[in-house]
Amino acid sequence: MYRSHDCGSLRASDINKEVTLAGWVQKSRDKGFIVWVDLRDRYGITQLLFDEERTEKALIEKAQKLGREFVIQVKGIVIERESKNKNIPTGEIEILVKELEILSESKTPPFTIEDKTDGGEELRMKYRYLDIRRNPVRENLIFRSKVAMEVRNFLANKDFIEVETPVLIKSTPEGARDFVVPSRMNEGQFYALPQSPQTFKQLLMVGGMDKYFQIVKCFRDEDLRADRQPEFTQIDCEMSFVEQEDVLNIFEDMTRHLLKKVKNVDVAEFPRMTYQEAMEKYGNDKPDIRFGMEFADISAFAKAGEFKIFNEAELVVALAIPGGESMTRKEIDKLIDWVRRPQVGATGMVYAKCNLDGTYKSSVDKFYSQEDLSKWAEATGAEPGDLICVMSGPADKTRAQLSALRMEMAERLGLRNANEFAPLWVVDFPLLEWDEDTERYHAMHHPFTSPKPEDIEKLKTDPGNVRANAYDLVMNGNEIGGGSVRIFDKELQVLMFDHLGFTPEEARAQFGFLMDAFEYGAPPHAGLAFGFDRLVSILGGQETIRDFIAFPKNNSGRDVMIDAPSAIDLEQLKELNLKVTVS
Picture (cartoon, rainbow, N blue to C red):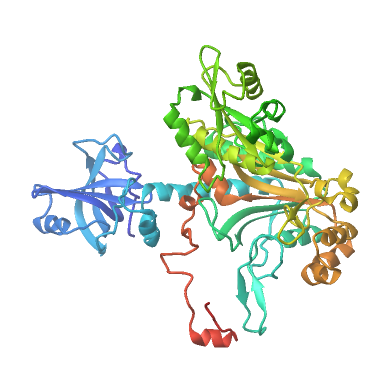
């Protein structure tokens, strides 16, 4: 037996017990005649004592040779600690060591294994197995496990069945790029790794499973960022004989359950907002509603003056920044430089200060009167002491730029409280979006999303204005889940493929198996998938998913710990009938 107790469990009630502990040396303090060693495992830290009055000299000398991260086993007696440490649960006791065995020696770690480490992100990712020993990373992984357990408990109690679906599947043209896998047994042919189990969960509904879920790995070969990885995890769900409202209700309940169980937070309301409303009020389809700063379209009266830039713009839109009137001219100039960055792409920004005396001071004073500026304030809800920021240009682009400014200012003003949770449903997305490069429509979600029943006739006459029977669950400015009511009628699915530019032959080649299944009695069905990594990180009070993944990739999609991706052996290439040419 390597241990009778873990390093976080002993208390004053255990004094005089003989115990065996094992773990890693966190640090040691050598006073010559006495040595203290902090022993760490997943559960906590216990202080070990080697005292020349009560410990053999040879044992003290052995303890003096211990380095950081040595793995050791000790046997000894639990005694009361003279200098108690109120910062750790075991701080009232220590172990008077009688036996010490070094199980495994360690090189000096490349960074300190402490809560606040001196290791940069790339270095810690290279030695991720050491980084996991740090409390913040370990606690994040434990938190992730707890969330997964609560998801399974909730869905199992709602009669969902967990079913595994294949990882080696057929490549499909919709969505992001596929990761492809060559088949040795089928020369010149390739599998794809699933971007989601979409078609399989629909087939499970055709198969009569009624309620399916899976916590599943998915893969997309796309550009990375803080909340995106090439391989990620979904809570994938599907239900039969349901409509949109049924899906929204059950996953509202699941989200409430998770917030209560893992954060002890009660959330009563899940507001509903249409896609159009989200874009008009916030400039994106995943608005953070923990704070205000809603957009106001001021085109009607901003274009009434002689300011050419506004008069020639498709849209003039504004928001009010609370307390922004106190910003100096230099600070506002820096803010204008911020929106001009390539990441935002604005050509500039007009502003108006709402002075405390009720007057206004604007960067375009010579074009607008005090009465004009008061209309800006009324439209944006600006109060004395606020700053009105105005942007103009093409509607979609301008709203996106103002949205970036809104989020930046909320961050600066401390309005994005990580311990506050504000979920909402965004509904009625466009079914199709036009792609200028390919000159055809693409599915905004995926080609199996059903149009709103009342919009089906528009597919033939006005496809760009057809609304999808789709919904996203948004929390704190992040999409945490999305789904739709599916097409289960073969003729409607054929019509959808036609609008997406598939010839009948192409549709048959890509999705014939699903269309064939619909010939055998497909039930009405709908589903939703949560981005599990993102959900966990938001519940954990962060927006970077890497900290909640055991072995993440870096921004280039590389695993720097195992050095992947990497070249493969020439013999493997020959066996797969492949040749690599790098241009």
